[in-house]
Amino acid sequence: MKGTRDHILITGGAGFVGSNLAHALLRDGERVIVADNFSRDGVRLNAQWLRGQHGDRVRIEQVDVCDADRIGALVRQSKQVFHLAAQVAVTTSLDDPRTDLQTNILGTFNVLEAARAMDDSPPVLFTSTNKVYGGMDDVKVELAGDAYRYADRRAGVGEDARLDFHSPYGCSKGAADQYVHDYARIYGLRTVVFRMSCIYGTRQFGTEDQGWVAHFGRALFGREPITIYGDGCQVRDILWIDDLVEAMRLAMGRIDTVAGQVFNVGGGAANAVTVRGVIDRLIEITGRSVPVRMAEWRPGDQRIYVSDNAKLERVLGWKPRTSWKAGLENLVDWLREADLMSPVPSLAAEADEALLAQAAAVP
Ligand SMILES: NC(=O)c1ccc[n+]([C@@H]2O[C@H](COP(=O)([O-])OP(=O)(O)OC[C@H]3O[C@@H](n4cnc5c(N)ncnc54)[C@H](O)[C@@H]3O)[C@@H](O)[C@H]2O)c1
Image 1 (cartoon, rainbow, N blue to C red):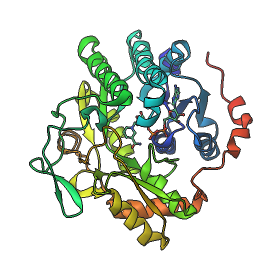
Image 2 (image 1 turned 135 degrees about the vertical axis):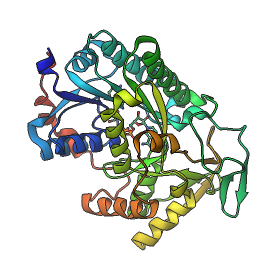
Image 3 (image 1 turned 90 degrees about the vertical axis):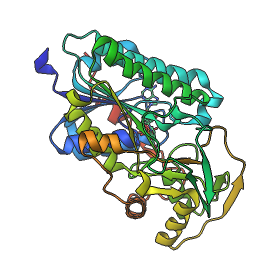
Image 4 (image 1 turned 60 degrees about the vertical axis):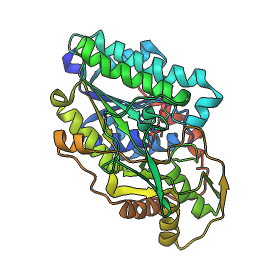
């Protein structure tokens, strides 16, 4: 059995984070299984791109994480598991909380149970979210000029912040986060949880519901209006994708050090920027303008979220390398190159059933 366990499994591997992680691993000679149900618009393009770049070294499996048997079979073939597949938008979770729960809780449970059933179980890294800290209404926030700031948490939010699941998405990711964390404690599995801030970058088919930085970039090219919910002074610590991928790989590489731990991972105080600041910078880079509409705050929206990355820096020596200004330039370069400037990506790749036909049947 050991001989066949030379793959790294990425659930949700065709998504934004997954395809970037897969690319980095494949570039370094690893064999990767991308397991995805392709429910996210546009992500078939990512799978196609991975296949084009890496040929047969990437195995692409169309599978739902709710399918315990098939996911279990893939976990059993893997030496490491990055569990990313998820229903990712708060808004969608409000409309359809059942699918959100099934994907995020049951899907995660399936991965954990498959690993638990093995003698030599692979380590599991889970991508959680800062949404597990809820609206943080107990944290004092003040408006300073055109940006919110913490009154007395200048370094940002640490892992000791109070858990407060808000919205079905917050509840489902939060429950999964706790399961993953506890499986290390209760069953000795080597798991690690990343509570991530807003990540942005190449291969992101962002919408205003999730992936708003890339959405803004594409809107600017398509001259589509942008809607700001709230006053635009809300602050996010945005993190460039390559920096996240580096942190994920570092954590997996030192799993015996980080197993059983939770880390906040974001751009940190140096990359904290307002929503308006992102739009202004994109306008500056592209020289284009875009109509901006204002709308009411959305439920659970934090006035400010900035991750304190100190723990990850202390344990793994990681910190973000890409400044938010440089990252936005990288993003615009990719949008130009990839010709993905319209807000809705071409779904021509949907027609490429050949891609999926090549996917090996799960033994
Ligand atoms: N991007 C961010 O800013 C951010 C922030 C915090 C946490 N996260 C988490 O990181 C992970 C990756 O996010 P992303 O930005 O790459 O999102 P994404 O939507 O691009 O990727 C998620 C992938 O999961 C797939 N998927 C959805 N439901 C599935 C199912 N039932 N079975 C199999 N595959 C399924 C989708 O098709 C998609 O390819 C998610 O777990 C998300 O909650 C992302």
